[in-house]
Length: 221
Image 1 (tube, rainbow, N blue to C red):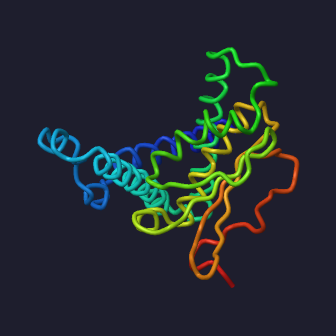
Image 2: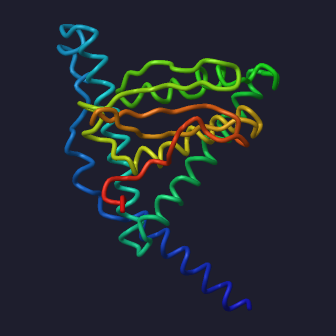
């Protein structure tokens, strides 16, 4: 028994060591440094352009890092479905801990943490880093639904799979802030051929207002 445990520990340590020294994927550097490091750019470009460029750059970095994590896990023999679930778990738990700390630090009462508060305080700042704009469709204490549309630069750097993995962060934030009462869900739809996404903060034990789970490209049968 002791030998088996020692062998498992050694294998886990070797895997961690291998991942720690993995070769950096070249696509992590293809986007280059952010333009806002340049003083001429900061002082001469209009604020609207600087804001847009920053959002696009951040969105690409998030997508590249997610893809790199999937690639590295794949190189170590972990299937994509299992790898994505591992990433979801890590992101969900990390954001849950942050949300619980946010509630403690700000001394928020459970009755003050409804869907509106969780959406505006916990989810919208996170969404802002993705470089998309949207509109609120439902705004009540029990449900907060936001719709946003695809296009440039959205569809260039966020695949459905990566977006779903990132959705675990929203789940962690919503569940951590609400004590498990509310959660975060995403769905992708199409209207007249144009794709759009929705996310919602809603009761965890109720059917979602979303109609169907998103199917990443190439998975439909």
